[in-house]
Length: 462
Image (tube, rainbow, N blue to C red):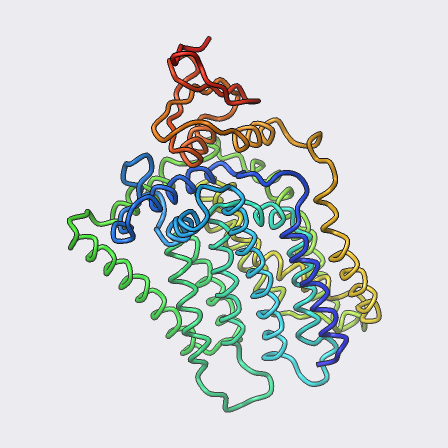
């Protein structure tokens, strides 16, 4: 590994961490369900740890998602209180770890599949993979959103890292069974399922693709697949048995009925099934990946004819595209919920875009490294740029609500703002354990979108 490769990877990671952690404008709890998950975490934090087998929202049982990500949220709220900044910091931590794990996966991919004469070494591909993630608008947005897509994305990144460890080595003929890589893959599938459920199955699809291409031995793939499914089954059955011993109903049976099956049959985002419905969100979240997919196909077709395309890394392109498209086609299209199910594909899209960026001439690597380092050092200054004029109306409402003080647990707040009731109601519950009521109802507090004020004697609003 050349020193220049270390330099390049370190500079891209520095830029990535700088962009993730230093953001312009106020720290807001954005995302349609961020307040909801924060509220679940607050209700966990207010109860003893022995009662965390039961998730609640508004003191009612909550079966919308598996508990792992919400348990972590509850732990953060227990330590830092109902702080939007703390939950956003957790999202930034997930994003930072995702960048690091993606870099490790890219480096290991080259180490397993490359040779001593390869023009592209592992740290260089790792650095370009980090840059690939930073080109994606979806990743930049998700790195600031305290929802469950961020920990799911981290689990998928760990799964990809494990997959690269299972690839056949291009230099060893008698390599041993990759036990450690299989165990990490099983752990990634289990943890991903316990965060968000079925979308983690895309890892099994990527494993199938790699096995079909003979990059992973069939026996390794079979052990990894059976072990993953078995571990998910055993862990869920064990959890429901534990809940039953405390007199609670089975969690995962209700989750399957209430969330998974309902999403497949009733929860469609766009009932008319117009395929053009996906053009805008795909381009807005994955625009660079769409372009990279086309360039990757051209590069693969011409790599034996054009000398400068010798840095093509076929495995990175294919595995990245398989994960990205697996999420979009396997989970977004069937339930028509691009806002919920398309985000985890960012992990694969980053690997795909990084593999295409790596095709730039090698002589530019040092200049790119220097530019990344300059960007990493200067980006934190973005925090001092006035940003109030650039906030959207919804962001202004969120900032006003987060900055307010006064309500006590159980207080009613008349919501006279134009905010969506789901967002405002759960944010009020998270911040103060308060209740949202309609604007015309009697309540001791009222929120008009700009300020939270007390009402004399809880009089009704307009």
